Length: 283
Image 1 (tube, rainbow, N blue to C red):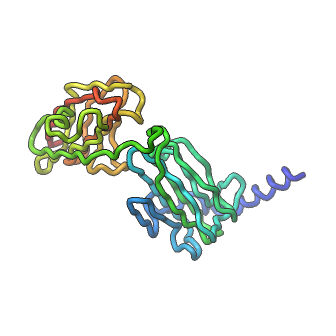
Image 2 (cartoon, one colour):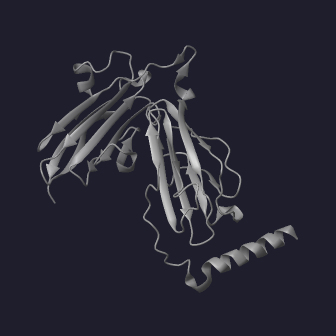
Image 3 (cartoon, rainbow, N blue to C red):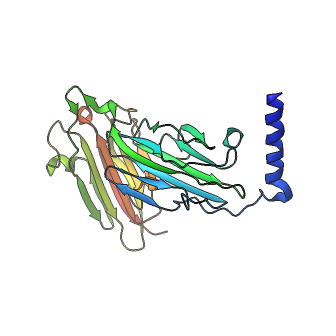
C-alpha cells in the first residue's frame, strides 16, 4: 500500500510539473557559479541563490572545489536547510561528485528538510551542482568546505614537507617545454616532490600546438603520484584539456593563445620526465 501511495503521489507531481509542456524547453541559466562564494587558503563557503531566503526557480549552479596537492575536501552544511523534497530527489536537488567533472563518481543527490551529513572527497577535487525547477522553491543551503591531509601522503612523523614554488614562463612562435629545467634551475632539491607549472604565451592572435618529444612516467597509471596536465587558457580545473599519467602522451591542440603545463611527481617518482615542443599557429 505504501509503495502504491508513493507511486501515485509521484505520478501526480510529475503530471503537475509537465502540465502544458511547462517542463519542456525551459530556458535555464547556463551552468555557472551562483550567488556568493568565499575562498580562503583554509577553505570557504558557498550558498544557493538568495540564501537564507527562497532560492529562485530554474537555476543551475556549479561549484568546483580544488584542494592543494596532498589534501582532501570536507563539506558540511549549515541550518536552515530546505530543498524541495521529491522521490529520489528528481526535482530540486544538490548533486555532489567525487572529482572535478560532471561525470566524476557520484557521491549522492540531496534534497528535503534534513541537511546532509559530513561529505568527504577521496581526492583533491569535488564537483557540486544545485538545480531548481520552475516551482516549489525553498530556503536552499549554505555549505562550508575545508581541507584535510590526504592519508595517502602521510607517514608516522606527520604530513610530508610542503611543495616549493616552481613556475616558468615561455613565449614566442615556438620553443621547448622540459622538465629538466626544474633541476637545472634548482627549483627543488634531490628527493623532494615536484609540482611545477609552465605558462606558455603564443604570438598575437595565434593558438598553441603541443607535441611531446620525450615522455616517461614512473609508476605509470598511479595518477595521484605523478602526471603531466595541460590546460587551455588558464590553470583552472575547468580548462583542463588533457592529463597524462600512463605510458603514452598524445599531442595537444589548444583553442587559445595561452597554455599551461603542470607536472606533479612525488618523492618516489622523480625519474618521471617530459620534453615537448610548442608551436604558435593561426587557423
